[in-house]
Length: 369
Image 1: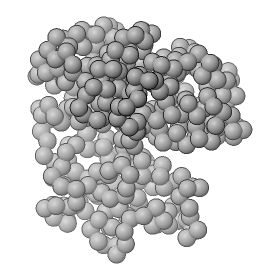
Image 2: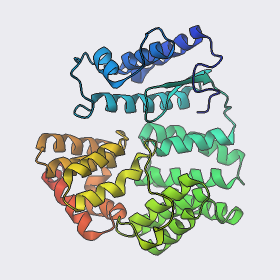
Image 3: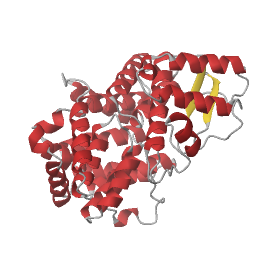
C-alpha cells in the first residue's frame, strides 16, 4: 500500500504511536507471542525513543530474551519473525486501509511510515494488492485481493492489467484450494483472452497464461510466454519470464536465457527461489536446498513447507520434516489427494519430481494420506 515517505515524514509522532497501538490491538497481533513486541521495538527505534539502530541482536535480546551470544546465521528466529511481521503489516493495511500506514521493507529492519495516499477505487492500489498477494499467497490475502480485484474488474472492464490480475487470482484460488472451481478456471481464461485482445503483450496476462498452461501441461505455450516476458523492459517481469522458462525446461537454465538479465530472486516474491531449490535438491546438496527453501519464506503458502519438509527429511531431521509436512497439509489438504500431480506441475523433470516425492515420503507423506 503506497505511502508518502520511507520515514515518518510529516506524520506527527503521536499519530505514529496511535497507529502502532491500533495494529497491536488487532486480532492477529493479539494472538501472537511476539508480533506486538517486535513492532514496538522497531517503532521505538524509528522514533528514536531508543537510542539504538534496529539490528538482529537488538531484536533477539528485547523480543525473544536471547543473550549477547545470539548469531543470526545459526538461529533463524529473528529472520522468521521479521518476515511474519512484514506479512501481517501488509495484510492489516490491505484490510483496514488505515490513515497512517506502517510497513516494513524486505532486507532490513527499517519501518516505512507515512500517510495512506490510496483510495478504494484506485486501479494502481488494486494492482499493488495483487502484487502483494503474490508475495504472500495465503488464504486470507487471497480473500482480500479477490474482493478488491473483483470490484475493480467491474469498474474497469477494459483495463488489461486488472483483467489479468483478476484472472491470476481466480486460477490461484482453485489451484491452491482457496475456493471451489465452479467455472472459475473458464472465467479466468475468458478474462485473459479479453486482456490479450486489448494488449497482446501485457506481461500480467502472459504470466497468468503461463501458469494456466502449466496446469494444462502445455509446456510449448509456457515457453512462448516466458520468451515474451524476458523481452520486457521491466526487469521484474523479465525475471519472472526466466522463472517460467526454467520451470518449463525441467527447472534448469537454458541457452535461450544466456546473455539476458542476471537471474535473481527477491524477498518480496519468495517463490522465485523455487527453481534454485530444485536444482540443489536434484544434485543431492540438501543443505543448500534447505537454504533456498528457507529463502522461499511465505509461511502461509503450502509449497514453502513442502520444500522444507523434503530437504529436512533428506538431512535426517525427521521431526522438523514431519512438522513442515503437517503445515503444508493444513494449508492445502488437496495436495495429499494427488501429490504426484501437484509436484509435476512445477517440478517438470520427472526424475526431480520423483526425488522430491521420495523426500516427502520420508517426512511421513503416506502416514497423512
